[in-house]
Amino acid sequence: MSNPDNIPKPESGPDSAPMAAPPIGATQMHARPSALARVWDSDLAYSFRTSPVALVSGIVALLIVLAAVFAPWIAPHNPFNPATLNLMNGFTPPMEPNAFTGETFLLGTDDQGRDVLSTILYGARISLFVGFSAVLFAMVLGITLGLIAGYRGGWVDGLLMRVADVQLTFPSILLALLIFGVARGFIPPAYRETMAIWVLIVAIGLSEWVQYARVVRGAAMVEKNKEYVQAARVIGVHPVRIVARHILPNVMGPVLVIATIGLALAIIAEATLSFLGVGVPPTQPSLGTLIRIGQGFLFSGEWWILAFPAVTLLALALSVNLLGDWLRDALNPRLR
Image 1 (cartoon, rainbow, N blue to C red):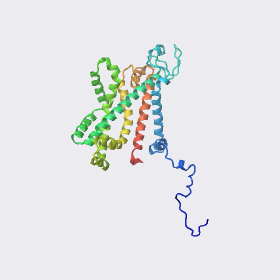
Image 2: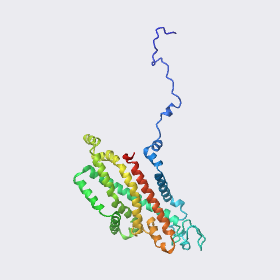
Image 3: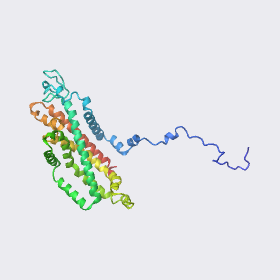
Image 4: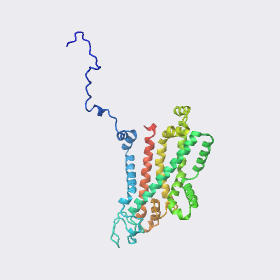
């Protein structure tokens, strides 16, 4: 039927025809990207994959960490199982058959006939465990005290910062030696070997918490005067909730940078203490203990006992340090 008055028909209504369905791919075109895609497209990921130094450092650090984690499955021998050791294999050079047994070892053997590659893989596990645990302990302690000092202020801030200033006057390695010696004095002799690693973690952590506390304190003093924190106070939000939900997330950027660099320092501190003979016990040798053992045979011609653990420690500490430098630059808004 024609429409002589040219009156437009209504676009919607009970008798109107249904709208045409969108094309098949329209909904997929406007779908939100996945979490992995958002991470890959972030500024931090782009900075990482376009930095050759960060890429190489990340690959080296990842390979060492994975090798240490899967050491029981990829190590040729278990250096802590006396049943697998043969003293006749002692001082075997790398890639050369032993004169008595005919066995060949990729990185040679030490004075007890242990495969150097296996000792490095197992020793790296202990070094990484001590380093990560010490950094985590120092980070939790430093962040907690820094937030308390920065948010409360007053005499609490003055007391905590004066303690931090006094601690900064001592070298961290000497302070760790002091804490380690005092802690071992309170432990019964029967438990000193089993508690040595935990005492070492506490000693390194207590010697490194100041850096986290000072950075978090300064950031917390800035954040607590901003409008969103003052608004939370006005509506009656508990101070603990304000600190945990509002201030803490905004101070974690510098903390992550310090933690990354602090991991390399903690690994070196553990190696130093173990090299001095006051760290990990000989029954659980770390990279520092292996270096101390190899140092005694350096001038007698068995260079590989010292060289390979030292190179592993150097590669691990250097790669983590370079990652920390890259992370510091990537999180710096002035360099974007």
